[in-house]
Image 1: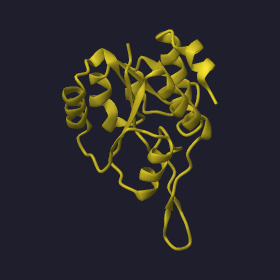
Image 2 (image 1 turned 180 degrees about the horizontal axis):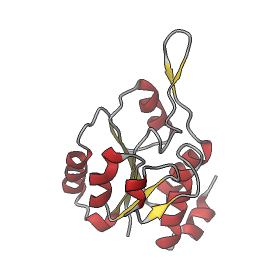
Image 3 (image 1 turned 180 degrees about the vertical axis):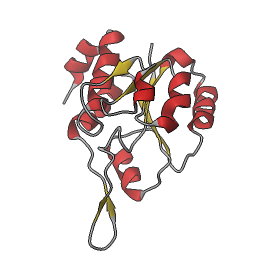
Image 4 (image 1 turned 90 degrees about the vertical axis):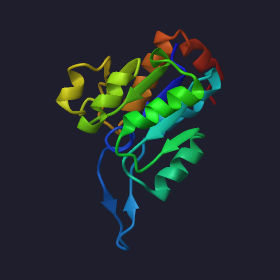
Length: 164
């Protein structure tokens, strides 16, 4: 049973674009439907985490708003973080899902019990992913991934009963 869903950010939770304001501030577009699924899935016992190579206050704020328990930023070798999480939380591979979109996600995806990629994810990931979204990153791909897991784990009805 999946107990923890880990996510990449750029190209997965976002469309991968970097938007810059006039003052040089970096902006990212997150999908409200992804956030809705994350928040409400926690009510049926699934925890969430983010592992990303980037670092930003904006992401910290987004993770806090969605009550994402585990946030790892500025990570170059994501598999080390996954090993640490597995050890600290006493989780097995089969209890972890991961969604990523690019070549730096290959190793960690292969370590997860269930892995997925957005429709516009790198072709190399699609060769072995358990799930390929019908949506691009930032366009609800994460929600589709979450709903697939909820249905696979027979938690979707409970999810529907607890949504707000």
